[in-house]
Image (cartoon, rainbow, N blue to C red):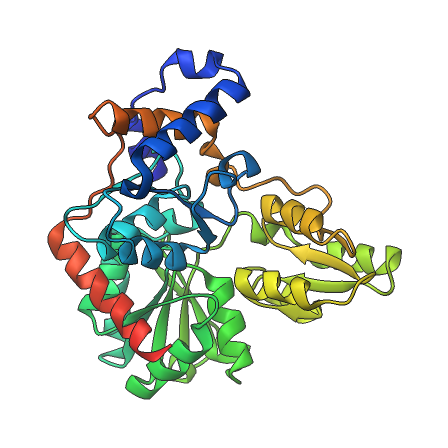
Length: 367
C-alpha cells in the first residue's frame, strides 16, 4: 500500500488528543499498559521518537521486532511503533489470534513505496526477455509484503542490512545473477564488498522500464532496482570532507543504505545493530560522526556521553514518515483497544503472506 493509499484510508485522529497535555497522555498510556499487561505488546523501532520509545516493550530493527512479536504469544494486541511494511511483516509472522495495529496509517516508507508489485512484475518479464531464467530476486526487508511475496514465489528471499552479504553469496550459488530490490545502495555496497565490480552491476529504472548499463549485458551479475532511502541518501561526500576538516580524529560510521561513494570514504559501515554495538564498544573520548537517522543519533549521543557523537550531516532531519507515530497517535491506538474497537489493523492477504513467509524463511534458514 502506497503512502497516498494509506492517507485515503486513514481515519483522522480526534481533536481531543491534540488538546491533551503530554503528562495526561503519558499517564493514560501507562494506565492502559498496566491494565492490559501481557495482552498488549508495544515494539518500537530504533528510529522512533523518545516520547514513543519510552513506552516500548522492546526496541530493535524491523525484522527483530516482528520476530519478537511472533514469539510473544501472550500478546493479543501488537501496537507496532514503526512504519507500514514493518507492521505487515509482524502480521505475516504472528498467529491468527493476534492483531497488529499501526498507530498512524500514514507512517509509510518512501523506499518501500519505490517498488510496487505491478512495476516489479513488469520488470521481471522484461528482464527475463534479456537474461532468461538466470536471475534470483532478493528484496530488502524494507519492502512491501507484496514484494516479499514476489521473491518467495520466484525462489528468492529477503535480506537485512546485517545479513545481506550472506544472502547475496547464497543467491549467486543458485543463479548467475541477482535482481535486488528496492534499495540500490544496499545492493551495490553489498555486492562490491563481495568482490563484484561496479561494471558488473546494472540499474533497472521502473519509471522508464529500462535497464541502465553500458556494455555487454552478459557481464551483468547484479541488477539493482532504482530505489533509495530518502534519509540515508542525504549524507554526502561533502559532509565527510567537512567533518574531517573540523575533526581530524573523527571516526565516520554510516549505514549501508548510504551511497557507495559515502560508504567508501567512511571508516566503518554496517547495520543499525552494528552502529549501536560499535559505539557501545568504542573507547571514551573518541569522536564519532554517524550517518543514519537523526532520532537514533541523538539517542546514541545521550547514551554515550563519554564520547562525542553527532550526525554526519548537521542539517539532517528525522525520518518524516517514521515520526508520524507520536504520543497522540499511540494513545489513540491504545484507547481504541480499550474501547473494544481497534483501529488501523494491518492485515496481509493469506496468499501474499504465505509467499512472503517463504522468502523470509529462506533468509532465516541461511543467515
